[in-house]
Amino acid sequence: MTRIVPPKPPSRDGRFAFLRYVRAFRRDILSANPERLYRAKMAEFRIPFLHTFLVNEPPLWRHVLTERPQDFPKSPRMAAGLEPLLGQGVFLTNGAHWERQRRIIDPAFEGGRLRDTYPAMLAAGQATVARLAALADGPPVEVEAQMSHSTADVIFRTLFSMPIEDETAQAVFRAFRTFQGTQPLLNLGAFLPLPRWVPRLHRRATLRAARRIRALTGALVDQRRRAIAAGTAPDDLATKIMTTRDPETGQTFGDAEMVDQVAVFFLAGHETSASVLGWALYLLALDPGLQDRLAEEAARELGSAPDFAPDFAAVSRLKLARDVFREALRLYPPVPMMVRQATCPAEFRGRAVEAGAQVVVSPWYLGRHQGIWDDPDAFCPARWSTPEGRVAARDGFIPFSAGPRVCTGAGFAMIEGPLLLALMARDLAFAPVAGRVPQPEAQLTVRSRGGIWLQIRHRPG
Ligand code: HEM
Image (cartoon, rainbow, N blue to C red; front, side, top):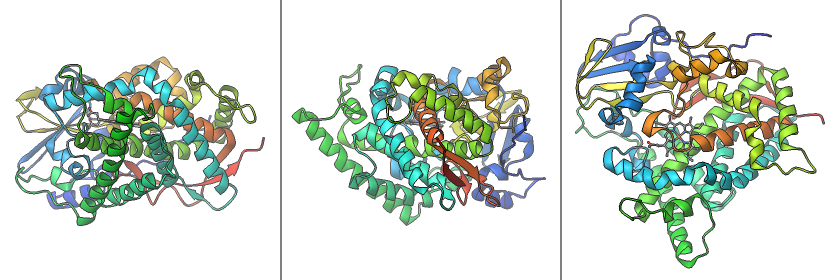
């Protein structure tokens, strides 16, 4: 079996002066950091007025995320960049406010409800295959943009029962792309030692795009509220969330709060899945034999035309598709770093952590950690079937985070990703384009500088 090592950003070599570090950091966090983070149990960064710990050791990240999450809430520095779009949405809040939001949202994403979203996901998957098939056997295709289109389609169909071709969905999608293009993952203010009262600068285009998205989703929420009152609302995620009462207070979300949550679902739910699907297609393109096996699995479990009627249970049998998707999540986790803030003094590996220090838990460094994984930089879906792979996953695989703030949509994404991969691999074959090796970097999620270009062909059959 040939060993496949897909692209990894170069690490910085040597020490940088502070300003050079800030500049490199602004370009791309992953390549601004030193190579030793792939080996370290913990790393400490101290710049004037800002003390940051990156914790890789499993007991330490578990302490922060799952055992003492109340002592390490989301860092307000991290939230600053996304506030214009997400307002007080569940992605950014903390404490009792956040707990109440999760009590209302979580029931919509439970296993039984996911079964109900399946027809909408399948329809979006079939639309994806049709779109890509129309581009097959032609010039190379940029698949990151294609996957953004597909996962936005999944979100609109499951949340509001409307395909991405709908005029409002299109307008939200366009405004979102503008927002994304103007807003880096981490507002630089988040990592500079500025006091909290210094206003964070957002570009005018960022604010305009956020306002436009919120106006459009506001109209959707308003329409839906009226349909619910009239008894004509479809049974989708939006209706479920808007009619769920907080078991403690009996209250539902107000319209303004729901607009915040829709922005969260759109951002957290489509940008992440698009990022990892783009990388998964690139990884598949590097291994034609694996693609053949995936196509066989997909045809066997999902069926093929003309009697194509997969049932929800078929997705759980897409084992190879799931292993490829997990391996893509390990190598290219869409959210490379999660930032928390210590609210009380602590001690990590004998070092004092003062209240206010930033604590970073990184799915990126954990997924490629040399002390956790065997041959961490190699693409090897087979590792997911080995006992060693499963042990490593417990310590180093947290692309959806962990603990009470774990991604609400993890179950949703673990159906959507393998399903879309299987549907695409069943009908199409992907190959790399000579001279176009993607360059991973941390944008809003982990994306490739200049996109991911692949040759697409119809699969004979
Ligand atoms: C492969 C796809 C996805 C990945 C890798 C992913 C990853 C993550 C991560 C790492 C977080 C925690 C961020 C932090 O704590 O700083 C998160 C939170 C969240 N995600 Fe996902 N996500 C994915 C898909 C989705 C989908 C499909 C939805 C909804 C439809 C969703 C909804 C959310 C929400 C609402 C939160 C906030 C939870 C909270 O703070 O309590 N995500 N996601």
